[in-house]
Length: 387
Image (cartoon, rainbow, N blue to C red; front, side, top):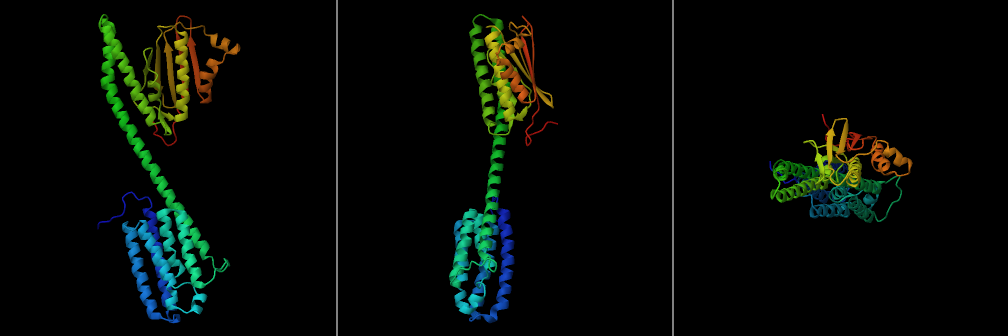
């Protein structure tokens, strides 16, 4: 059997549950009708109105289950039918009967209108519909009762509108967040696929042209320089796209951030698979790497090159940064700290210690400098896990 129910309606379970309540309230209204028909002044009209109530109950159940009734016009029509049937109590019952009983269609059956309004438009509209129903009920009675110990119908109407409306809002919000996460995941996966293709093709060719051009020398040196510039620009572009794709997610690929550090004097080597860490951990690690590379540029010498190697060891992640510069005395960092110069201890060692990690320095005059930055894996709780 075909259906027009919206395929991705997050409130569909609420609509189905509401129709179960509609059936139960209809059975209650039928029992009330049968039990009290002899007390009505115009029982024949009462049966005609009950036929209208029955037909409308069936129509609403079909409309909401199929989905074509989940729109303001239909819910508004239901509200009008409900208050019309409440007011029609004047046509079938005496004033004395009205004062001694609830309205003819029963307030339980009338609650279907606030429930539908709450699912469609949220708690405020649902509570407003409940107030509207009770206002007509009060007008029928000719008075408003504040004796909630004997008649708490208004409290029930408000509570139903609030609870069902908040449930509908929560369902829609959760569905929207799920769809957003799925779209972002698909976008990141596609960017990673394209990045792999570019890396395995264009970037590798440009790197080969740059290297061979420098080896040949002569007129090809200029071509090698241009190829090298384009390789680095393309590598940064691919990395920046990956960083932006994962910027708002809890899980961030550290490789993309480190690849942005590559330039004429910095060679970055990363694994072929994502190294996913919490975003705040990646930010601090990237900042520490940036400080190490700044020191290379400032102190290693104009021709020094740096080599960054990322290793994912499962329980820990290690970044090794080595340069081929002038190096320094192994006791120099401690001496600088004693003199009050805290650049290394705060910007590098301090950052790693704040992540429960470590920063180990190895150096000697004429042998360059090597940093080994290690942190626990800090995997995102909801992100992919390594086996």
